[in-house]
Image 1 (tube, rainbow, N blue to C red):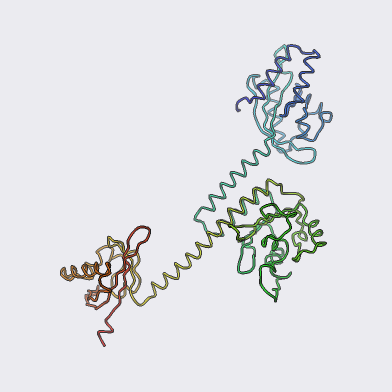
Image 2 (image 1 turned 180 degrees about the vertical axis):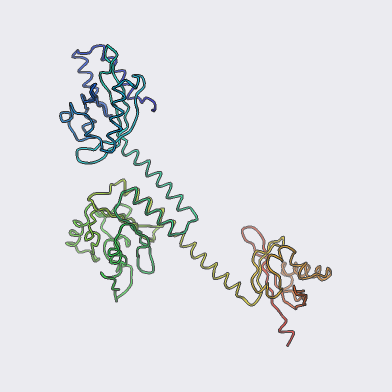
Length: 467
C-alpha cells in the first residue's frame, strides 16, 4: 500500500474543510485555486468512475485539455496492457473496499496525446456523502518517469561496473554490456568496434544483418571490403565513425564529451554532403533503414580504444539523458578495455616465459624460504628424476643428499650462494634412480611483494666430466 504523502494529507484536509461549505462560492473558488496552483496531478472521478476534475498539471503531462476529458472514464489515458489493473483499482474504491483513511497507492503509465508514455505514482482516496456512500475519488499523482528512469540507469550502471570488474574474459563482458544497454534503450541494433591494428572492426554486434556488417565493419575500406592501396593512417578512417574516433567531427554534431547522436541520420548525411567534410560519408545506417544513431567513443584518458554504436529505426529515439548515460558507460568500458588489453599482454608474456622455462636445457626453480617449490621446470625433473610433488613432500636437500654429512655441506653452500659469497655450488647429487650426478647450482634471492624467494638454476655437468 504505502504511506500517505504530504500532498495527499494537504488535499484531503482541504476537501474536508470544503465539504463543510459545499455549494458556496467561496468553497468553489478555493477548490479551483487549489487545483490550479499545485504542481502535482489532481484528477477527480465521480461514483461512476468518470472524470470530473482535471487540473493544469494533468493537462501538461497528458497533453489533453480539461474540456477534452471531462465526463470520460480515464481508460483512454492508460496503455491497453495496464487498463485492467487500473479499472480494478477504481472499482475497489467505488465499492467501498478501501477505507477513506487508507489511500490506495499504485503506479501506472499514461499514454499522452502525442504518443509518449509517462509513469505516474498515484495516491487515491474516496470521499463519502452524507449517507456514507462513495461520492467521489480523489487521485493525486506525481510524474516519476525521470526518477524511475534514473533509478534504472543507476542499477544498470552498477551492474555494468560489477561485470567490468569481474574476471570474465573480454568477449563475455562486451557481449553482456551490449545486450544490457540495447535492451535498456530498446534499440534495434548495436555494436562495439575495437581497435585492431589501424582499423576499428566490429567485435560484437546485435541486430545488424550480415550484409550490413560485411559492408560496414572495416572503416578504412571501400564498400565491398576492398582495401585502400594508399596509407593505413587513422586519418583515412571513413564515415562518421572514423570522425568520432579521431575526435574531429564538428561540435554542432557531438556532445561535449565527443559522443555523436542524431534523430535522423539521412537528414544529417544530406547536410554533411553539402559541407566540405574531410571524410567519406557512407550512410549504410540510413540505407539499411535506421534513423536514429548514437556513437559513443570508448576512451581511457586521451586514448580512443573503440566505439559503442546504437541504432534505432524510429526518429529521435535517444534523449539527452540517454546520451549522458551512454557517455558514462563509455568511459568505464574504455578503462576496462585498456585493463583487459594489459592483462592479455601480461598473460602473453607469462606464456612466453613459461615456455622458455619449461623448454630450457638447464633446470630452473623458484622456492620459498621454507623450501616449497613454486616453479620446477621439466629439466629439473629430467636431471634429478624427482617430480615437483616429490620434492615438496620430502624436501629437496633430503632427496638430493641422502647422506647427512653431504646434506649439511650442501645447505651451508646454498646459504653462501644466496648471500652472494660464492657464485655457484659445484656439487654431486643423488638422483631418484640412485645414480650420482655432478651438477652446478646457482641460487639467487628475489624480492617479490615483500617476500623473499630463491631462484635456482642447475646445470648437468655429466657430459663435461665424461669428456
